[in-house]
Length: 488
Image (tube, rainbow, N blue to C red; front, side, top):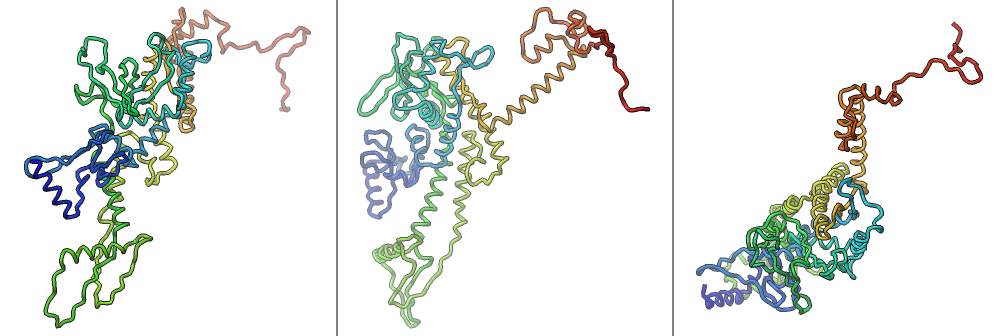
């Protein structure tokens, strides 16, 4: 399309008082200058320098392209303006921060208690307690999860000396992908141990920093990338939810328009006498004047509800079933779609009227199938970053009340299984070592024997050995059992 035609089209729309800014935006009319960027925007901003996305088309047909959630900035605005999406992401972050960081022995999977006796672990624990001067661990960890859920990844800047061990890192800083851009490594070779990202460019407060890839701890939420141009960065879960987000915002906007611009519930028209020769058509100016006048009427506190006229008028009622718009159902369907994509139980969202039992089982599902797996992947990145040998950094959620019931059930199942194996052992069906190995314990040398052979080798260990019926104490008195019961 030529530039003259674009200008002519925009001028034509302006003369008719039709605002088309944001018409093809996923955010609806929010795309028309509602973004808090310190410049005059008439469409979706693409950066902090005043650049915007514009209406484009092919040929002479001015068909706008769909602007979806494939870009970093659009994902960010989706989180800002789509409250159900932000609610799901924030709840996932809150649930993740419930975990307690532990250092676990890789062989026994038992938490290490004497951390202070291991200088390297002591330094790491101190860093986790205060990752940077302005955030606590819970704030830092929650922000990191939110960024991962929005963009699919979160680059973490590890500030420290390159000549010292990673445990001497002074601070961790989460970098927002909106202001931090990865630069591809053109010399990347799959046979070499190097990153696909050469460095990251951080733009903040008018300054630009180049951060080497080796100083970035990359936390990922997704699993695969879109292609070679993504440099191994995973696809965000927000990507692909274009219509869910757009439908939710459109339905909310429709509800808002209905409440704010409903106006009178009908049309007041001139009640002409029967002998009138004809009607004079209203001019566009008269119609605009009437529309402006009717705008004073509506259902909000600042609007009028009654029309008073000096002219003979008649009432033409106009009825419209607001339920036909099905805005509530559209919003509910969009929320369910967002919950499915993020693995968040929809029963935990408002409006489901779930019972206590349903909510309890949903919370268990949330932790077992979402929070804990994500936490394991994330904390493994920390373990690899600090190059720990024989030690794992993990989060524990066993203290949560919703998981306590499962711990009790697991203990009962463990005891029942152990009792069954003991019966098999004492019945001579399995060896001692087979019993231990089924409980995932190490075998004992020389104990590949069955119970009958075991009691022969260690007779004192026979728990079924019977004591004599009578014993003779040192005083010589007979203490054998006597009949002291009732008389026959």
